Image (cartoon, rainbow, N blue to C red; front, side, top):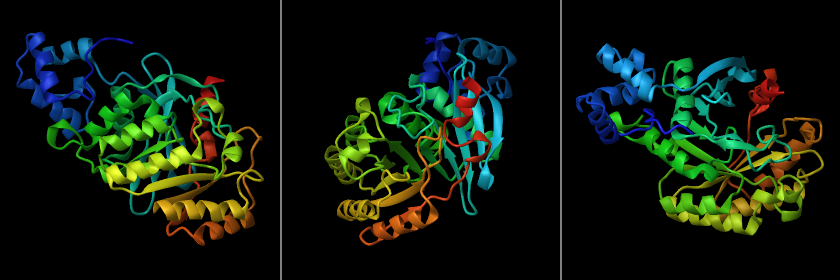
Length: 344
């Protein structure tokens, strides 16, 4: 990985020090941060109130963006998937998810995923590497350019297990929510970090004590069923996951959301739904049900009647249950599928 100074994610003080080392005036740091965070402009050559010589110097020594959008795929429900090529040729995805009242950006945190949930395209080929902070923020940058404005919400539910890339994810979260010219000023309550249930990362996230949202991909209510869906290397016992959820709720003061992908004949028994409802009730958690989006024919979506029965079973106990409206499954634009299509 290059050791160059990277503009996206830097603070004004870091930028002042860098500029001094380059023989430049430190007051330029505020101008550059205004472009980066106030205007969400990462292309140094577009920072027009900087002298051309400085812009060219920055392009050589700290140029951004280091990535580029190579494909935009339209999905169902108005979603747009951006396939982004990184500086080393690797590919990631981000998704713009509209609704009548809001725009949500779904961002990735890794190239590939080490968890390799058996029903998910994102981890089909395992982990390649972590994304650096600037690469995470460049996904956000391209989303803003595509949408024409900042989003209402951000979810880190794209490719990767973000809590296994905590250092870079944490800095990206800080920049996204920092005020004024140090960041984009988004409320932490509008930013959600998703995890497959990586307990050490959940504990660290909880200890941070910030009011970002946490979504836990549970997918089962017993360890045997969960072992059919998530390989051993990153799977923790459900009891430990729930303890980490309680710690998060205590430290962050926020409710956990359980993500539960329904798979035909595996985890869609209404009895499992009632147990999921009991767990959610005990932890004062929300439940988001998702019908499986088949990847390779191994797992199937339950029939509509089964989905309705499961949702009703959860509702017997849980106070907040939603069935996610499917968006993005067309045009290979569900999570991870566009990347797989390009890398075959």
